[in-house]
Length: 283
Image 1 (cartoon, rainbow, N blue to C red):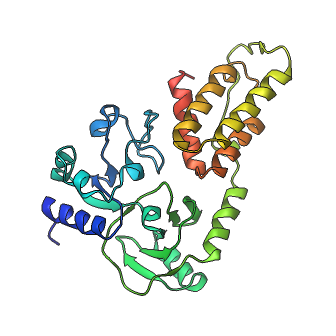
Image 2: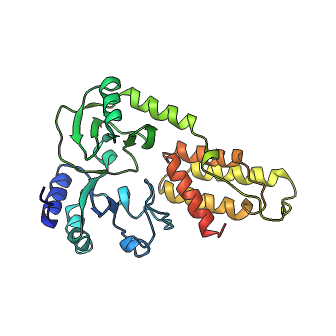
Image 3: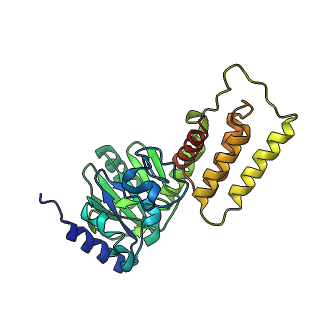
């Protein structure tokens, strides 16, 4: 198969943008380009707000799904020209187009979908299929073996228009994601080690810690924009105040994760933000 040229990717991106589908270029490995100096050429080490190819420490939501646009002036701008010259694919932000992509990454997942989900438009992938529905929802990874949900705060690779008639997002997908979120506990991915030597907590009463966690929950809950950045900064503040004395428990962390997930963050997004905050503090 002939590899598409730079002009092919750009033409595809412009065509999608004109149809109201927000797009972005991907570099080799299906990784987004960085759109701020800290993330240029992958200097940040990964991607914020999506499955991780590394730990991006940039607190801004500057690339990945957040960079997707329908603005043809941006897509053809000098700033994006170098990205198109080395692009390896075109991606789009499903929720930005009012869509949800059920990413079926293996044959068993495709077989499950054919019995569990209503038919809709399908697109063949290298290992399975994308099933595309009308409607948006919270994105989630690994809701069952080989199945990821890509909608808000996520991107999907454009592999063509697909076949079949697009149908409405079924409740079965929403239920599956909700059930997975309840079943997964942060204790499996988050640890807050007590410092070597068992340093005594300097907080005079448990009220100090409880007030701090409650204020952090409120800060996340009241965020009206830049939710990911707010979550990261809040985690950073909590760890800065309480992360080295050993007083934080998995219950406290679960409360913060729950507040963030209620605002649309996935468990993986929360885990990445927590890890990045710990790394920034040298923990």
